[in-house]
Amino acid sequence: MGFFGRFFFCAFFFALLQSCKPSSSTSTQSKLDASLPESEPLSLCENSWEQKPGTTDYTTYDSYNKRTYAKPDRSESQTLLGSKSQAIRPLCARARFLKKCFDKAVMENNSSAGIKFKRWAEAHGIHPALALMAKTEQETKMGSLPDSCYGRTCNGIGIGQIITAIDENGRVLSSSDSRWEGISFNILTNLQYSLRVIADKTGYSNSLWDLAFRYNGSVYARMYAGNVVGYYANLKSCGLY
Image: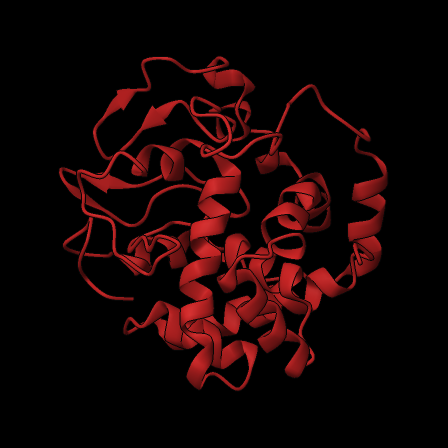
């Protein structure tokens, strides 16, 4: 990742320390999943920020500016992060709960970045939605971990921990760009920006490990890539697709 745009430093190690190793027990996983309710009263991924500004389904709190969004459409407890619901779910349940979000952000994404990434994934025998899920699991345990900011320095923003944001025309957003609101508060918008950056890294990537390594780009990139590949393997056993 480039060290420009909204942030001047990226402490990848913090996120890596908080990320758990993938579980090897799929039978235990299935039993835990079966005990969870089919749905919860959280309305997630109905709209992106671009479709409906003010849709704060991820969080209402801006960690970078250290303030609550002025006109949220829900309370913090009704957001994914504020509800803390993902923290009590095992991996497959976290993924299943957000499947609609990844379907919209990846499978139904016909933007140039979406098409590019899906073509790359198909060529390498990778399921594109599961790949983005694995990356998101590594970043925030799919919406369990809040942003970590110290002054004007953040590890990343939102569910995908965006550092460098690229718009649909390939331009990097400045730190003052109002579009960061969507990246901060909205799940779909954040995942769409995540996909753009990932698609940009596919040119020289020949595997998911390689893609994750290039995406991270820090001294911890090998550990990061290994974790993403491990989460992807576990997600494949969840029966989501």
